[in-house]
Image (cartoon, rainbow, N blue to C red):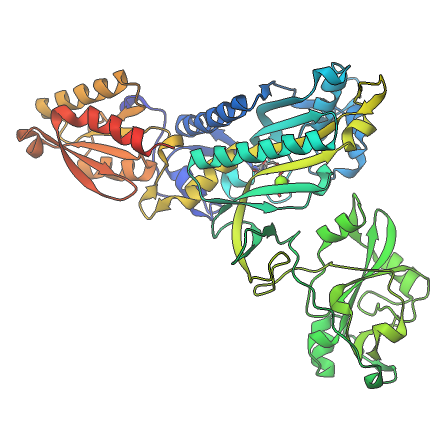
Length: 572
Ligand code: ATP
Ligand code: MG
């Protein structure tokens, strides 16, 4: 490609919503432009990198027997009603009607469509296993689109689905995809961790996320310093040491007046007690059933764990009316003792082993002191409903858990029969009996992977692409455009590299050397072949390695060989 004709311009200024380096750099490098919130134009440089990511994905999946399809973006509501997700998916699902008044949505994911397609084709166990994927545009009406391609509303995803005869076979498929993801992210050249994850709206109960480690990541990962345990904080657990109580310490409960003090912070200041002296009591609706959830006052309730524990689709804080019905008081005064209607009480482990605690009195403007869980109320379920914190002990080996920030670039799920049962996707087994097919699903955010790679690989001057997904592998920079020798050397090297199948750009613009260098650093070509008049007098050319900054003088006639060898050696 000759840069003089290339459709792009580099920019100095960034829009104010571009808050993280990858967004700023991809914007400044002329790769992406926002059309509307969370909706982007991919310019040629971005699309070249995206296509390389897609090809790596395709190659690794093909090696493992996966087959590619392309499914519609527009999906009929009937399928979502069958799976039950039309009502549960929430406002991320962009719904609309066609001219006949039929309901449709833009696909945020494709479990329904693929399950429908497979059930129309699946008859016998002899046809299985199947592993089918697509690389396609998704739409999710994200509440806070941000960070450029990292969290868009319209984005490119590879989504794949496996179909097996039973759980064992499905878990084999899961393992195969897990390994495919390792191979894909290794080839792309990012540093990542595969971590245990919760399954969210998708369903199923076994899942891993592939997290690119980066300070700006939205996800928090807890990782053991001693073994391979790593989990998203939504899922992470730690060793639980059950506290013991000495009943002889129990004091009598007493109501205290706490006028206008509702939050634990406010009441703890007012009563001059640490927040760890409180039992935090929040009333939730778990799939519409009211449940009082308790945790020690200095910790937060982990709603993802509530969802998993109750196998629930929707976990919501109860509104004032329900709080009033069940507690008899307003929010802020709810507690486990003296509720006006009976309700299921579930408690985090942190609530066990506590003595003489403070809790809401279920009476406006009052709290109770000296509440003792063992003595004063019944707990229906005790489980882990909290968040692990730094320094907690690993549940596998008792090592220390350390926090890291990550960008979720991919996720693999074991789905079981959630969709095949609700949508009747079955096959005839060896005994001629109908069985639901067992499924897995596997996503990679293609645009997010590109952005995460930039987030992890840049410096003050610009992007530092790994060779495998760089828009171009090499740029040739003739510095003095008025010198015939320089121009001729540039042309020769460029053509040589093209003929060797190397992805090369030639900066044939009549710009100053400084300008070309800046552009080349910003766009982040892994190699710069610099042709200057002076060194050319000695038949030498300078090659700069973007990543290390190293500059090597190479004889003019060896340049293309040198570049070819470098790429061979350094491309994953
Ligand atoms: P997140 O938790 O970040 O919202 P998710 O877990 O809902 O993502 P999945 O349903 O697992 O996403 O989708 C598979 C992959 O698609 C994700 O791992 C991520 O790389 C990508 N992805 C999801 N949402 C977005 C988005 N809004 N913009 C860009 N990529 C996305
Ligand atoms: Mg995910």
